[in-house]
Image 1: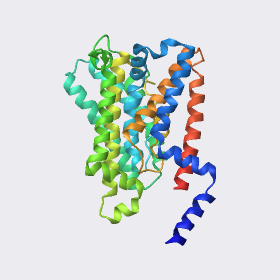
Image 2 (image 1 turned 90 degrees about the vertical axis):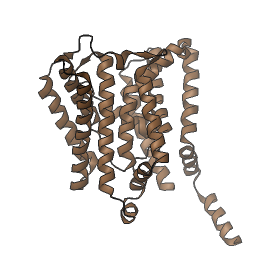
Image 3 (image 1 turned 180 degrees about the vertical axis):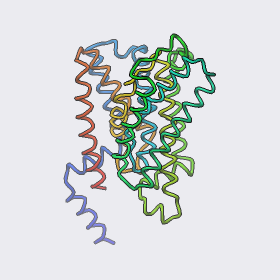
Length: 330
């Protein structure tokens, strides 16, 4: 017993200091992100006191709500160990269909049901191709991203589709002074968090992503869970398109451009493992907030918005490298 304990101690001593630091960060990543957001907020407030005003806080949450919903959908797929980078094109396509149906005075309930059905079908297409072809999901969804973007151009013929004041409540309405998009975003995160923690389906998603072979040998229908994860991602992307088009008051051919990058960056920073099987709903929220605060900060200190992509790229690289090192050390 003594020798075993000594060996364990020796192993800990021999572990590089950098590796120990990375492990500590990733064990308490939510706490680390909360601390980072607080420090960033203090620095920004010193420069511009308007940052901490309630209205500005609501503005930040409102701005991140759509990308937050998209991030939640992408996180469900990522938990299973797969990717879906077609979400931006899905938002554009469903937004175009939504605007077209609204301008043709189609029944609103039927329109909303149709959009969710389209989202689920687009996710089903992704899931079936990925699981049945056994090809890399990143490459498959890169192809469907282009495919769905082509659908957008077919539907819109490259033109904008204004709603002319219709369908504004979901994107511009308020409930007790809180913008509805924020309520929708937080509701999605709460439901996902509860599903992941308390339902068999949610726990099985983590098992599939954590160890596909072990899940398969345990009798889990791995393909079924991956396909349904893609369908849920599509449904949440449909919800995001509903909120976004209502907020913008029009559909544009490039409405969803860049959402896949923003969503991927947010969930990676939030601690969702790129290799599956690890992540929390709180992490998704904090990851999205980090970029929302950063973007707002750049505006307040009069930094060109073009630098936002520079920061996103750097943060993605750093987060992926540190995540990989953390996985390797574990």
